[in-house]
Image (cartoon, rainbow, N blue to C red):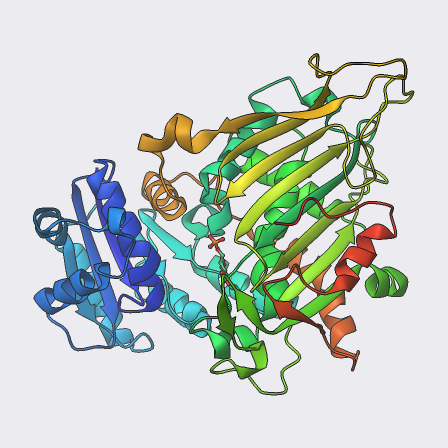
Length: 489
Ligand code: BG6
């Protein structure tokens, strides 16, 4: 199979940080179809060779084990080319069309890794210049809009020139091996399914904690915030994967139909739940691993009086028969104590106790922890009798033990990273791990009341020190249900 991958934003951050390294890994693993061309597109005036040198120099900044050797790069770079384009100029699309005509590849991938403001322009031009034939697939990066109306406007334009099957909306969390394992755990095994419901599960907690601050994206982040950047997409996709019904088959629409139902079943917000169940925070100065760090408001590109949130914790419920009354908690933020992403399923206690249990509300007997990163695996926490202990006369006390599955160890050598997986899926035309427009719109519909409530609330986000787990109000929120956030750190 032959493919042409046209990378709009070919000299941008995303191109060299994520997309090129992922394409190179696919090339190194032998999974990238060999008859391929990768054409970087930008306004810069570069020859093919200059573009190759630029990409080569950028590879010096990626992780060591993902960098190509000289010999590998010279083979990989044979695929690379460059096309100078002004993305609003129709004549430039005619030049692109001529380039594509040279060989009429089986698949043409248009990867739009530009500023979001250009998405609609690029898609309109793709349509106007007749580049939207059935062999074309368009990849759109988040953020797709900043609220429901702008998201709809983008989706409408894109759908006016392409069919839904040609549109690949990336949520890179879905490409993470750990998230695919979550689908495998739920729908490839029968063990947990009978327990996966309100009768057995007390609560579910989704944590995506980052140590990093806003890095070089201060200006972008300041107009975005954690709710739009992480909750509307990544966290809600994880919640869907946890809460959805088993799909009827593994086809993209079967999976996406079930995720959509979860989003539609999320409990609507009321003024009361908005004020009690949603906490926003903003990092102040502090230190992580001994390094002194600036406050968010002192970051480059950030308004010194910014009220943008860098932390969100919230509680919601899925209103259906399986989940009614079970709290789902989400917490995500920048400059937290650790880089750690995991989902914790807390099971209900035994109905009657014959043992002494070393338990509190914060330390339940049975927990399933799905580690997403940096660890990738599963921990099943149980209680056991330590036979070495003398029992004495009283009621025996049980000790916590855990089963620990490390997927990095088990599958290490063959692991395929998120962007690599997603790029290969685009080339193969597999939509399973991409987001459909109705899912995206439903997620925006659900977060919008939070955005509205915040814009009418002058108190702003609560401060927290860098290197902590966010504002204390986040722990207070969950404590009102008599639960605690899973172990911190
Ligand atoms: C991106 C956000 O979608 O995800 C970033 O825009 C965030 O702000 C990143 O840092 C986190 O991704 P990962 O894969 O490092 O957890």
